[in-house]
Image (cartoon, rainbow, N blue to C red; front, side, top):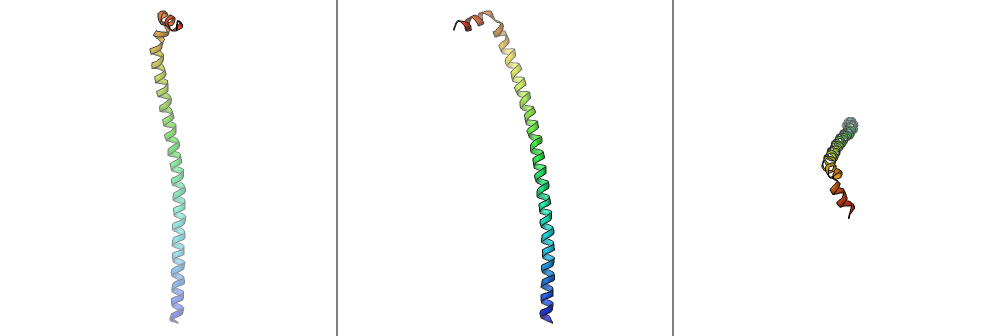
Length: 85
């Protein structure tokens, strides 16, 4: 009789452990998928923001360059000096 209880007890413990491990595994998979989705979303958002900042910097630098070069380009003496090279 003792052997039967021990065997039954080990089956119950084993089944309980199996259920607990299965639920933990499914929770882990769900959390990993959610984290992966969140990381991808955040990365995309940061790339979009970085792209916007880069475009603004390029636009600003282009405007500054144009403001700096325009007086030289309109200067006849400067044009003739460049053309004579």
